[in-house]
Length: 249
Ligand code: MF3
Ligand code: CO
Image 1 (cartoon, rainbow, N blue to C red):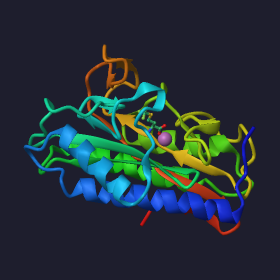
Image 2: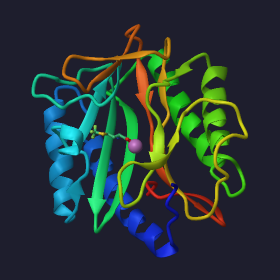
Image 3: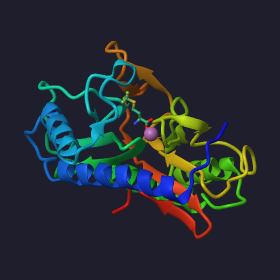
């Protein structure tokens, strides 16, 4: 069942999303060669707590950190570590969730570590563009898979592939609610979008093949062919005035 949210509830989700977006901005400033992903996790956790909120990922299904830090061929759910030091030319996907006064916000973005190569640049801009194309379709009377199709077509037009093993999701009083939102598929399928739906839209895009494997830590997803991967996510409310990306500040 898809849980619809009132305007008041959307405002509360927006509050959580606002903290999430600010936390990500704070982390972004610290993405420089030499910093470890564990240090980034500490920044995330302190920032979220300083706002009186709770890091939503920590302890979620046993996940050990507040932030997911996925470097280069890592797709999602990379675990922060004192052993992982960023270096010039890396790309890093940062994903974080905030729980605040009963509601969740979820955001992700992929950043360059100083100067990166052309493929990496194109991968990041393609993934960001795909998210925008998806958000544009998050309007009343469209169907859910119109979002999926828009994401997949814009990615494939640029010669990259969308990950199929992970999906976007509804969000609200739970981090993951119905519906699941694949980043691929034919248009015109699935539930009709109505006012009050709130969706975390999150394309993951690989420079090579779409397939991923999970490392032995049980969390880290990496591309099977070890090609680079990027991830962008916004929490988006469907309103009578069109899509409202609550994690955009
Ligand atoms: N960010 C993921 C999502 O958007 C959730 C991460 S789950 C965690 O659904 F366990 F890694 F925190
Ligand atoms: Co999410």
